[in-house]
Image 1 (tube, helix red, strand yellow):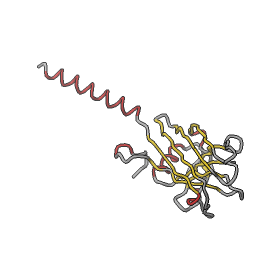
Image 2 (cartoon, rainbow, N blue to C red):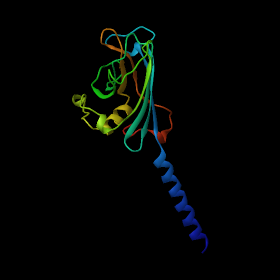
Image 3 (cartoon, rainbow, N blue to C red):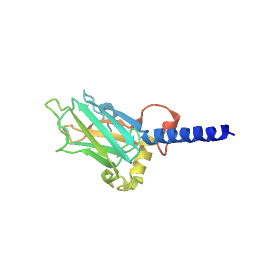
Length: 178
């Protein structure tokens, strides 16, 4: 008779610990940016960058974008919807001419947080409406979201990279991943 209450207690504690660990779980994202990934004009140069982000359980994404040795001052960085080697609509402005600070070598770092309020309507033709954070996450999970940094002398993008989920743990798949 004492075994049943003990088993119930163990089961309750295990369930509580599992729920607590799930609440704190986040998803790690990364993009490696280079001019080789740019289209329609591939950029051969020394420009490079990284985008790292954490997809948080509160429907936000915290990020760090670092870039270096771009061909000109950075004036815009965006998250777009588009498969590799295609162009797509802008859904998030990471930084603009004022907030994309770069040094004399056209290098710099930008940090911030993206929420539904930052998702604009630049990709409505692709099915992503303004404020639709869940569809942005689904696009990232499907491999059709990229980061692009504009710092070229001709107004074109200078570096670009597809956003990917880091790691390969099956239970860590993003919502919408197949």
